[in-house]
Length: 261
Image (cartoon, one colour):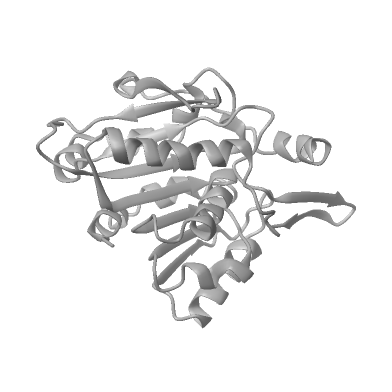
């Protein structure tokens, strides 16, 4: 598994690693399980955070280029969106950015490379990867220890994180009120587990040569066949960084935070 992933991950590396000036507002934390497993994550609290009120929880899964153990690099893409003054004012929420270690992956995807390019196999095993399991455990912890509105838990992710988003839905279809997978992919055979339960807004770039848009298209096709609440936006001129126009969608957060179980 590790040998297959290594060359593929290299293609995910992003050129820019400039963090938002206000990224330190995301508090550095560690989630440690009873078994001693550790997951680093950053948490943004609502400006008016208090125990007398419950807030939506947004879990954001980064791409492969932001893996590591510095508990910082995962903020490169997406953290700015939730730091905007009008967003914090209009959509107060607890926002969490966990970080996947360098040697692991959010999704259990098998990656096959040959002369025809990269092929992804999303036939999930019975157990998730260590990092995705820790994310699931972190969500349980936050529901218990923080002022989380359990009916408004959302998951977003890009690239590797988009794959992890689809897998989380397959493994925990009753957990989330909405999901936003960006330039990812998943197993169409699992769509029946969450179709009709979780609204999705899926994004991809038509010119993506890292994760082919076909992987999102086939998920959307199956979800539509199952009459799921699904919106698909494919940008004709975007390549792998389709998260940039996705984050710029004026109705994205309005849609996201309007969803409730």
